[in-house]
Image 1 (cartoon, chains in turn orange, brown):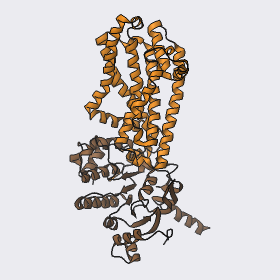
Image 2 (image 1 turned 120 degrees about the vertical axis):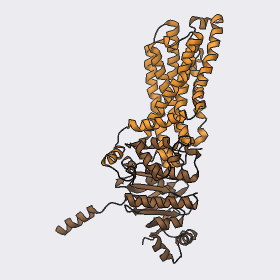
Image 3 (image 1 turned 90 degrees about the horizontal axis):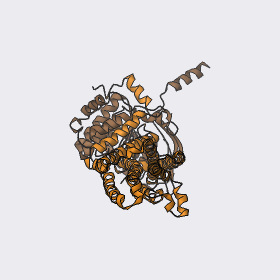
Image 4 (image 1 turned 90 degrees about the vertical axis):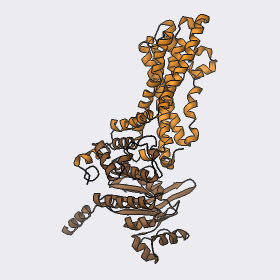
Length: 286
Length: 263
């Protein structure tokens, strides 16, 4: 008789009982992260897809910048203004998409029925989705940033420490959006799946990614200043054009991020509870 | 006084049922899936939930697993209130269904490793190797879960369900879509596993021969209610039929008139 399947040791009992403690478990978060890494490893087209769009965007805007450098005072004043914008925008987009895709992997696999009969807590699952989103952003945007140095002799890292702050604000905003979208998919089913690819682009025009917020009509500027991303892109231009870091922008963006994250997480957890009410966890999927 | 103490000690020594359900209901805006059912499943036994499609079996299993919130009633599993303390219970139970596949693109080993970590198990690789030997899936460990036959998937799903050596195992039609030989192998394995470990099994099934072979208690469900219960032989005797399949057909073809008659 095999020890592993027949004779439980006190140690085994302790381990399974520990899984029932009301504590956040890094081990369970790592288990879920491992699942997503296995998935990524099992399909090279998925890894290539992560690199593809950020690199393509960077190539297009890099050549555009080279052209405008000779024809536009705006780009001439700071060559990297468009390249930095496109790479930072990708942090927001990849942050949201990375979270949503990992979530959708469970939907496509109809795996929620298996996951939530284990001791996995919904907030541990969310932690693994955030961690995977962070990794997907690094895999996607990192090589594009390095390629910009090689091709255009522009390094986004010249933004210095503000870059880390911009990155964090945009990533958290991406997570907030991603959680809200996942909540909507939990509530409305796979019919809402396309939100994962589309929703963030509705914020692009008002985030003032490539132009100053002052270009927008007055009423739209109020909307723009409610987005954490607007402060990042305005702050980025302040660093590049005026060589000043506007801390007030960062503080406001951080505060807005907290509000957005609270709203996104609330929507997600309410939708999760609603799915348990409706019995959707066992049925949810394609 | 002494008698009182003895009786108290006797009650305290009686093991609480593995599952104790009282007045459980699940109502949706347009339908009642489960309607005030009560039942208990003794530890170390195998019990079947029988009923036609839409009788409420899967809804009942989902509530017991914590996947679905009931509208009313009390659910105690392994001595804990499932609605308030499900995270104390979930590490001690597990679930398998041929209708809920493991993620297709991960290999069997990767799937089992992920679940072993979710249960916080030590000696994960050794445990998986042991289960793989027991369930004869060693050759499948490095194949994607989506590339397996129905019989192979069932054995892999069982491996996942037994990873944490559950005290309570819930099964949803464990031999559905299996050929007779594989079905028989799975039934034999479950029988031996339960005897060896003393675990409790609650299974929903449409296979009456399987229920007669494995189960000491049957809960007959219809339109969200438990309409009868007892051992397979007692039900066969009570209805004067040749086997459980005939009892099943008799019950599901009767109109629903009255609530459960507790015998």
